[in-house]
Image (cartoon, rainbow, N blue to C red; front, side, top):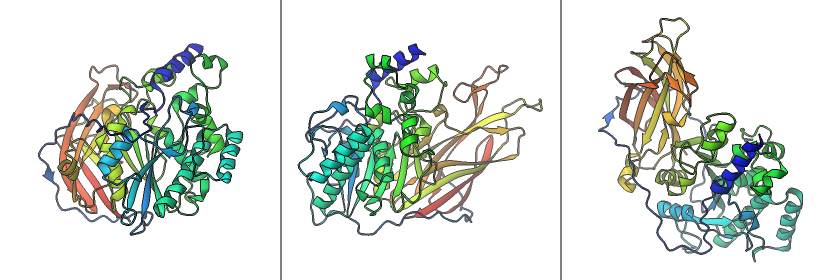
Length: 493
């Protein structure tokens, strides 16, 4: 067990947990590097037939006030040496993610805006540092000192710093509400801010929207495996930051059922989530840690997939990206931009599927064909306006997140009810392009399937590429070896 601790500790020194190691203390002038376009080809789309009207009621969402002036606040992630920083906290923060956020949303910043005519501004706060900012009153200093005495700093302290920065930004700009965009550990900071009602921002309805990206919403797996051990301090400095990202601490200090949302605490706040699933990058921490403990679990290299979202009826985007790479992910910024500006949320569900060729010898009554369905959603508007050909949502086979459906017979309908897309779209978007492919699995480590009599890993059941109108209804789809129905729900905000 000790060798496991040493190994994990060394990995944290090399990789860090969500750190992009690129802090900038002044406004950067260098243009961000354009994301490399390793693109999935989109064949000519086939338009689906007129939909069958849906009878499912549209779920209600928070009503967003019209003509609302907001400040959108970016909350950054963990930095290994951040808790030791010696400069003013609660000041403007600059990094590549912030630069790309401004670039793709085309929103003004609090550094340069028209105070009379803005509707939404971008800003970012640095919660690291050891010196209070000039806008703090004596009561603010008392609050920070009390939090440090109670929790040793860490997440609660950072949440107070972010909340006080937000209040000051509202006062300075004249805006009435904030939106929060948080990444990695910044999402745990934001969660504390909301659930503990720091500075009364939540209870006074000062938060309009919150989107969490690759968030440490429920904790960090690798840190949670390394419980307190004095020997570990040789390899990694234990700090309030690393301790507060452990499952144990979150369950004790936030919510014992941390996957759930208390509707009263989040009342009036529009929420969205982005999770990543590519854990195979060279800088992946979990690629090395997971084999020492539980074996493969879906992850983005730093965060387990299951730890990055709430179990609730919230919009949830999935991208096959790595944790460290998110700062240059154009698809991520597309979804953020849509969340901030869109007036409609789209839910697309694969309702059922029937196989005409099961690709499995099922003469044995105990045999079943294990089937999964991969999906990718493309935005024609994003291709037109941003030259983005990558999916805006992708739930792919190699991520390991797909549900397995057992089939025993051909030409039988199997209920699926698998979410293909649940997110926001451009206000002028009238259709989306959908790619679906079914696979019958014979052998797979990531899906824990081992058929010793088979030499293959998986068989394709055929793919479907089609364009679907963004109208409420049920649509039929079909390929060579399978067919089914998908449901589209349009939720006006």
